[in-house]
Picture 1 (cartoon, rainbow, N blue to C red):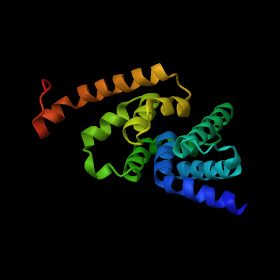
Picture 2: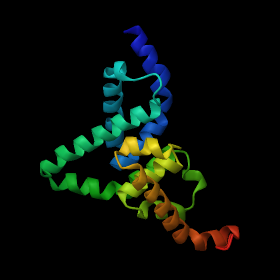
Picture 3: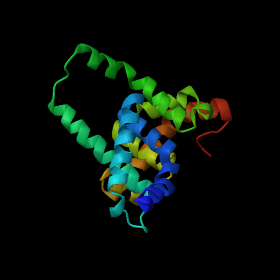
Picture 4: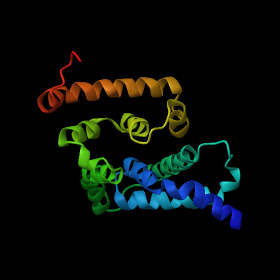
Length: 183
């Protein structure tokens, strides 16, 4: 048991901030992200014997998190919203929670409102894939494993997202930084 605790602390505790940021990008709610992180940590600790030393701990942890999120989403989709307040809280918190996710990821202070808006305008799948690539520095193959999306689709998604962001941020690049499209 002591070895299990040590292994967990060494491999997964350093990922806490990034994992919370990823949880926020999935849930769009600070409290739900914290719950998802805690559930993921419990599951990862419980299944740590299945972790292979040659595996990437970050990808393994994020995969568990994503699977827990999907399973929870499916359960919630089958059960109706019980009160208007439940719906109201979820609907009202979307933008604010993504802003918190960006703060947690440490890039809130270095991006403009235009960049933040461009990221928030992306659909859920492309935003998640792009954040895993651009912010969490996962290679394509690991993003495919985490999201269970085919590798070719991951590459296409990232390229399309780069194009969308470039297009939507071109005016900002020219105005603020003197970068023209011809560069």
